[in-house]
Image (cartoon, rainbow, N blue to C red):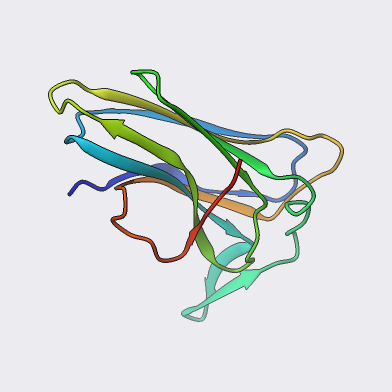
Length: 149
């Protein structure tokens, strides 16, 4: 089974923003099968103090006003869109973007993914963006936030 982790160079912490767009892509020869793509996010600033994990929630706001939109698109035309509000401050959560199918392992599949919240009627803040995960569908189901369209 393949597990792909698209880790950003560092965990991005957004203290306060009006407009959020996170996007990336991966080009990979996946084994044939169905895959699920997730964003790994955390509400609150995660850190360590005296060897203990702590979380500051002082900047967490605005994610309950309008949903975040997640998208994926593959080089062979597959497309998935989902939306959900971000919640559970203080926990790392995987937000399900969508699924895609790979039929040929000898041809690289390009997967473009994005996360946006571009409603400028309110600010939002206190978000850590860590990584994007691609799992074989059904590989791991614990702590996954199911999004909706």
